[in-house]
Length: 211
Ligand SMILES: C[S@@+](CC[C@H](N)C(=O)[O-])C[C@H]1O[C@@H](n2cnc3c(N)ncnc32)[C@H](O)[C@@H]1O
Image (cartoon, rainbow, N blue to C red; front, top):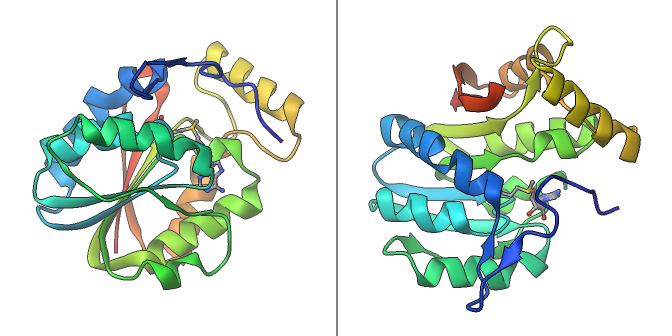
């Protein structure tokens, strides 16, 4: 099903780039974490790239990384390509990847890093478990995964706005919604990853996960 999200209907520029307000807003704080914690070299597998805005900005600012944008929806690829064309970063052509499909990591071995922004709250919990376990399998030894988004803490939303957004997601599909930080932490641990949460603007978290 296609969800109604705050960014649904984002503007498309004449060169094909989708302008997604939330991605533009969170780009700087996410980049700061990547600059502090990402490896200097290797493949950065970006899951759920969406518009491609993040790929363009982040790959340019992290020039040692080979950026691999992916998304489950090939309809995103025109915008990802258009954004990549504006970037000085090393960005490969976008490839299809359904991160909830068990076993996908076998096709993506040895990634130095993985970035996932704003997907876990949009998929069912069992699917999120697959995503987290496959990310661990895709990482090279000492690889780092960056998981950004909104989370429940001890089962509670962190603001009225988050509670309302979570409720709107669950109203559209009762199987989706914010995941609890404790549950995510347990999944990561079971997948062999240590995790350090970093507070981000607007009550979001960046989970920095090391293999
Ligand atoms: C809210 S957008 C986030 C896009 C981008 N990361 C950002 O922050 O702007 C969610 C994206 O996840 C993609 N997506 C949905 N289900 C997916 C899945 N199972 N595997 C990979 N990507 C998926 C959608 O096509 C969409 O591009």
